[in-house]
Length: 443
Image (cartoon, rainbow, N blue to C red):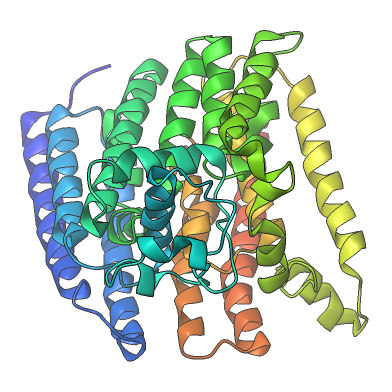
C-alpha cells in the first residue's frame, strides 16, 4: 500500500487539530450544565459536536493508515475525557449506586439483599453518596455479578465519583487498545478507532456519567480480539464477563461460536456460574435484584417501552398484548442466531458484522429509553461503518428531551425520529449497494 504524500498528512493533521480544539471547547462549555432547563442548551452543543464528529468519521475512513492522525486523534480523545472527568455527572446519577454497592460489599453484606434505605445499612450512609442514589427507598441493586465485583474492587481504592469515572475511562483505554490491535490485524487504518474515541455519546455517557457500559464494551472489544486469534476458551470467558456486566452481550454468542467447538460454550457457562456463586446466598431469583421491577417500571410489562409494538397499536388501533411481541422478538433474534450459527464464513470482519447486526436488531426491538444503551454499537462501527447505525447512535441524544416532557406521545415522537429514519437509511443504502454490485456484475 503506497503512503500518501507528506503534504496530505499535514493537511489532515491541521484539519483534525482544528476540529479537536473546537470539540474540546464545547466539552468545557457543556460540562457547566446543571439543571433540567439546561438540557436544551446542552443538546445544541452536542449537535455541533456531532457535526464535527461526522467530519472526523469521514476523515478516518478517507485516509490511509497514519501514525500522526492516530496519535493526534487519541491525544484529543483523552483531553475530551479529562475535560469533563472532574465534574459531577449531569446526565445520570447511576454512578452513586455503583459506589454504594461497593461500600455495601466492603461491609460484608450481599448487595442484592437490601434496598439502600433499609435500616440494616444505616451505618453506611453519608451525605455525599447516599442522598444521590436513585430508587433507594424501594429498589435493590440491578447490576449483574461482574459489575458488582468491579464496584467492590474500585471502591477499595476510593469511594469518590471522580475515581469511579476514572476507572471507566481506564476501561475505555483498554477498548481503544483492543480496537487498534484488531484494525492492524484486519489491515485497516488504525485511525478508524476515532469512530469510537471521538463519539460524543461515548464521551458524555462513559466519561461524563461514568456508566459501567464502558466495562462491558472493554470486555467485548477484547472478546473480538480473542476470537480473531482463535483463542476459544478466552473468548468464552471474556464474553461471559461482558454478560456479567450488562446482560445483553450474551446475544452475541452466535457471532463468536465456531461450529462443533465445545471450549467456548463451556468456558462461557462456567464463568457465568462462578461469577454468581459469591452472591447466591439471596437465592437464584434474589440475584436478579431489581430487574423484574425495572422491567415493569420501564414499561416492558405494559409494552410502552417497545417502539415497534407501540407503532402496531397506534397504526391498527388495537391493543396488541406484550406476550406476542416478546415471542416475535425472540423469534427474530432466534432466526438471526440460527443463521449466524450456520454461516461460518471466514471473512476478516464477518463476525464483527454479525455482532453489529444482532446488536442493532436488539436495540430496535428493545427501543431503549436511555441513551447509554446505544453506546455498545459504536464499537463495531470502527470495523463495519454504517451510516444508518451512526445516525442511530447520534440521534439517541434526542431521548434527553424527555426531561422536559415525558408523556407517551412525546416519547413516541422522539423514538420515531430515532428509529424510522435509521430503518429507511439502512434499507436505502442496502438497496443502492446491491444495485451497484449488480451494475458491476454486468460490466
